[in-house]
Length: 566
Ligand SMILES: [Zn+2]
Image (cartoon, rainbow, N blue to C red; front, top):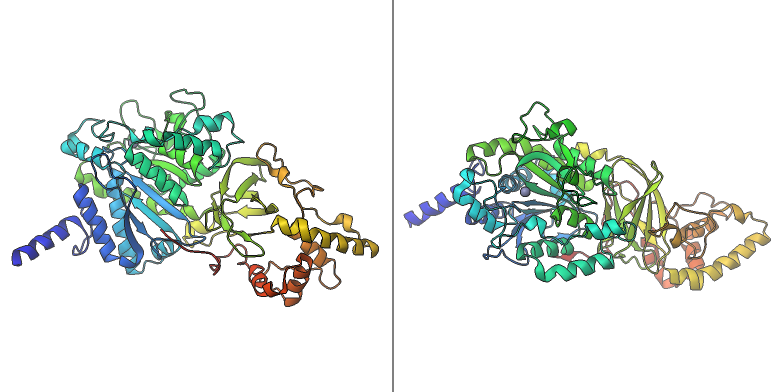
């Protein structure tokens, strides 16, 4: 018994946190030890963790284990962004693998210690940590460890570079940029499906993972240089290097890259030694680089995230040495800790909100969010879509934008917003929230319009100057191919909420009524209901719908939205 107890105590102290006063040791962890570390964290922080594995194990049968950290593990909570870190997809680039293990332990410890920022982060973000995407490559690289050759263990057990194995959607996008602005366009999904049978099991697992979870932001941790790399990785012309290939979200990607590099101890230090004899001094460009401007990567995970899903992924190169000595690991952690945290906070940048049916309150899945940059006066040719819970997340750099939301069978809506991302630096997660209560077209076209026309006639009779009231947008105004900002006078696609409001406001004494603000009285609801000819029995439901969370404030979670058990 004594011996067994000693063995358990020793195992625990070697691998994990549970009985180690100083936390996880700074050393390399093999697959069994990695699994034990995750188990130890989960045991220490059971209320905020969940361990799960991706669909397929590696070629050699090792599970791809994810530690999820959230105040509600296993559940997508509407308006809480989902974030992921992926480590070690190149089996010989091991720093990210160890950093993710330390990050898991740190988040657990600090949550328990009552660290306010960490508590806020975990309470408002669903974090997924995959320490190794290539356990077989790691096992090979670890044989020689830091004495190994530059490429030993880079690939998986089938000798395939997993970061070249993802469906290549870039060329499809380059050939028809505006048509392919939606992440889940038919052509893209067809191409992904056609490649399923050829993908490595590790790649297929990650592709499925990306499709199954509404990730907003992601970091892929590599080694071999010190820089944050952002899309596109694949050049437009096929040129192998030095071809800056900007994505439609280039400005936002640069901001996200800077969010990491600026908090890293060395990335922006122009005095530091470059990697290798012919290395580039990335610090001179702020510690960041466009992927294809450095060298072109075809079939990479980063571009796949952006083109096939709503997730924005960046690649962190964590240092010159891919498999450093254990004695260097503590410095790596200290250099990266703040950067790793700050980057996770960026999943709260931009704008988010709920898109739901005005009448039923049901969430609307796959609504398309089109963004127009008001400052530049042009559309960002990359749309995002609402999740199956009706929430959407659109990462954006500070600026003034117009959001246009469309969904089949609903009248499109448009809203102007100003993004500051100011709260991120204070770690308050005081996110910009813009909700969209969508009006079903059926009601517009079959019932509401008749009523509206009747009301209009009355008003014309009353000599009301109706011509000065604003007109709704037509969906065609924002179609991918020719969106050029909202236009007046197009009523082909029916009327929207604005018309209801206009009618209300045309009533004497009701000029300032705003049913979407917090205070709405029964009279407004009755008037709107009469206009929409909604059955009286629905009064209560409609009341709820008309009281969405106030804009630009952290919203309460509506009861009507379902919560997923993953
Ligand atoms: Zn790599």
